[in-house]
Length: 309
Image (cartoon, rainbow, N blue to C red):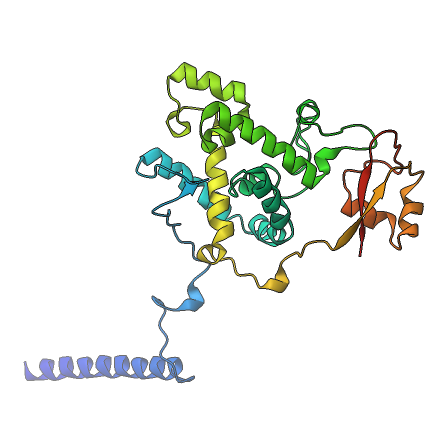
């Protein structure tokens, strides 16, 4: 019995020695660079990819001074959706942050002169992204006017001149529409919604559902999201750092520097016109996107054409 115990003890000692040897070897390998390493890293930043966090919905938000009823669940969720979509739409939102420095001063001045709340500059962002775009339906420019509607608001639209591309004039036309809608519906939120679906369309839904308030009406998907998209742009563009967007002054697009030339005569070719004003055709077109051809026929109107300083 003693012999068997001795053999058993010897075997245990050998096994223990082998285990201790392996532990020493592993420890030496793991500690060769002075750090303890393990196969499973629970708090090692090297193993973490991009991290995304839930966007916090503001406790209070208003549009043109009219409070958003965020205590209503679906209202809060609809706002959160647009904050998420635009807060994580990084390249597009960065472009908007760059463009707003160039264009908001122009739009803000006209809104103030026309008596329209400053928040409507964000409607312009929702419409076009502060770019001279054309929709599949043919809506054009910063404020996305259709040709017929543009003419109703005294914008000139023809093969040589399309004032839907004229930022100042189209902004004033949009103000006229919005003030008319405000008079019809009694509040700016409904006026904004009607800019998307038309005054007639919004009025029909008010009557159909016996509800006057935008937030209480069931609308088509686009208009249902429309005011919330405007609100999201307002929140993100006004507080970009809260959503992880960091820009310095030099990162932003600065306003164009120009003077205006009054033109009451026909221009045969803007390449020649440009040379006369020490610039080139491209620059004339960048500053005056409403000039749609190489020439301009002047009969009764007088035009103000921007040329660089």
